[in-house]
Length: 338
Image 1 (spheres, one colour):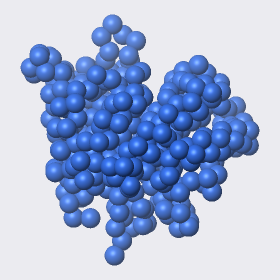
Image 2 (tube, one colour; image 1 turned 90 degrees about the horizontal axis):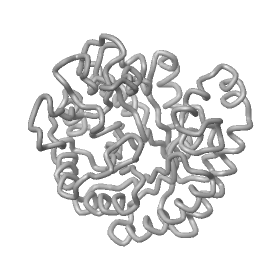
Image 3 (cartoon, helix red, strand yellow; image 1 turned 30 degrees about the vertical axis):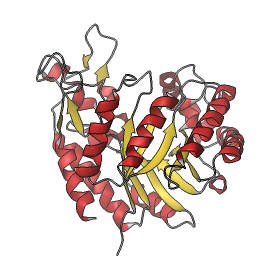
Image 4 (cartoon, helix red, strand yellow; image 1 turned 180 degrees about the vertical axis):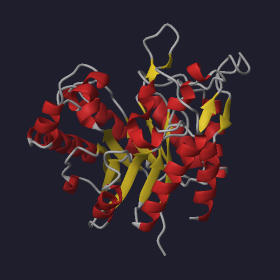
């Protein structure tokens, strides 16, 4: 019988430009217990920039008996800075193996966007926009330059990582990146279904899952409004963050069922196509808070399975107050029986 061996979720401990870096220790313990006991996950992909916070959270996850996919992210760094960071993280990951030998080290995430130098642009946002330009699609996605440069960098990164870390290593790739998977123990893609790739989504999953190496979907998820399932990873783009008070760019209709159905539909594909590991994106994204006024309901553009309540709605003194969304309950049921 088919099954997803690693039933996981992404957990953010702080990526500076997009998330909360001051996550209290007590809140991490509380939320990891929820991930284990309510969502029935057996693994957590822990991502963030601060190494101490990554280590701290990893130990909590291990103490709860869950597998750790250790995923440091050094966004907007140069090649040299990133390689130095990978060295530091690989040493830390090896130390964590004393607590659990099953830790998987994810050496990076979509380097073509996270790093400076592979695609033009000083920030991730600029690189995303440049990647989407027609000339860039022809040059970078269908050409060989980007992929050759990426794989050259990955080879250096893996060499450094394996000098210090003696467990399994993978890389969370973008679906456009043509990675040399011979470098890694597990193949892995951040793979969001959208209106442009829906026709080939299952076929692509099958192609990877039928290869010799185990296959992981390190990110997949959806936002909570009508039409978000068509946007996939671009679902967050409905917010105008440049306004004095960030708000939605136009009127959208909140629909938590869209998010829930999207996640369960993809999990059923993974189940039937023998995917080894699946990590829903994400447990919580604290920056995009819920508001009862639809204009300011930034949670619509939030991939989190829980909605973070804004001071306009609830306790002014508690920035970590949240409620479970429909997708939370649906995922809990799915993971409990599959």
